[in-house]
Length: 316
Image (tube, rainbow, N blue to C red; front, side):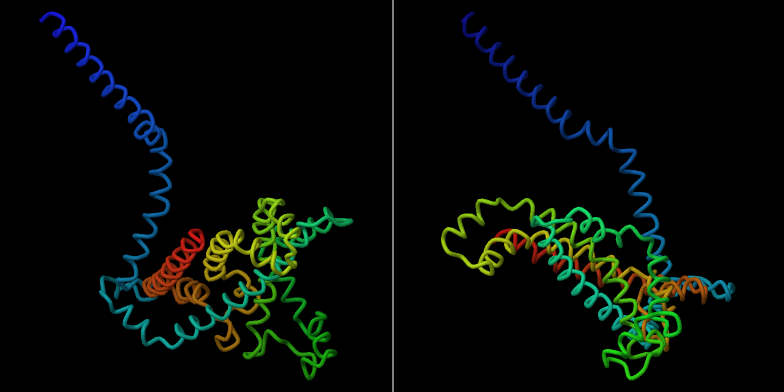
């Protein structure tokens, strides 16, 4: 009986010791790190969530500084106004056009530069520095430079296009409603190509060289190596970089605001510039918040779809 009691006490000690060890591990790895991070988590949460909540609440209010006696909650009145706002739909169409063509050229030019920089050639370091230079230039300065380049009096681009037969004569492209949007798009392509070049170059350098050697031994052509090895490895990176860059460009008002100010005749007005002009020129913060919420919903839907596609690509 005494032996059985000793064995029972030993088992109880082992079980309690195991429980204590599990509690210690749980505290050490699941609770303690978050206690150390809690000040920063609270700071980031307050910086991000508080403005978001305030901005969304503004979209249900009438806040016009030029009409201070008409403030207050208006429910979905701003959203009803947004649905019938012709300028909003023009800005949305311009946003899609501006974002799509900017991403299209930035991605393919960035991919080509990344593949070029992934090879060895004379003067590679100098060329790489020149490729990454636009990313370091302030956007305001980039916009002023490109506005000067498109100026028919002191800029060369209209004269080059006229010499090539693209234009009938050198004139101000940024003043033409049919062509003005291509001015900021061109500046944005120049500014954004280094982003894709840097990220895709890092992804290319992570692909094992043995795969290309095995493909070459099996008689694969360069195109087959690219489609069967390079693209599958780059697919997850392509999805995340395209998603991030799309969100940035859709919110990127600097180039357009400096080069054209949304004109002429709203031909270059995108949602981000429309938000800015509504808030800081018309001083209508309620309606500007409504446009911002609409842009947020559109970008969130886009991000969810692209992340779902990326998940499928990773599985493949």
